[in-house]
Image 1 (cartoon, rainbow, N blue to C red):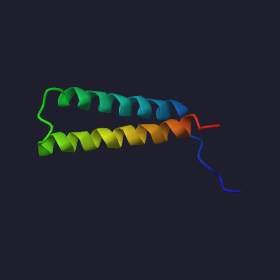
Image 2: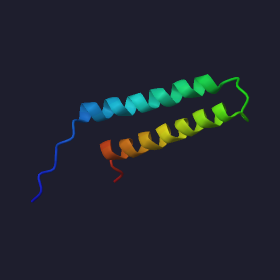
Image 3: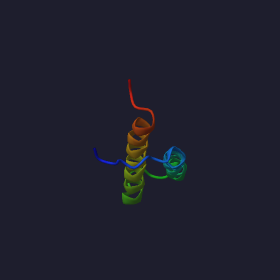
Length: 65
């Protein structure tokens, strides 16, 4: 039997909140900017990545039944 490390749930929840905050802050930055610039698309990509990672982490914390 392999010894699996026990996850620190407080750290996981903190990381989840951090990803949500990053996504929200970046969305605020994009408000009012032109959506055809490279910078806009780059920030939009980071938002999508943060949202994706947040969902994956949420599934680890609260697995679907």
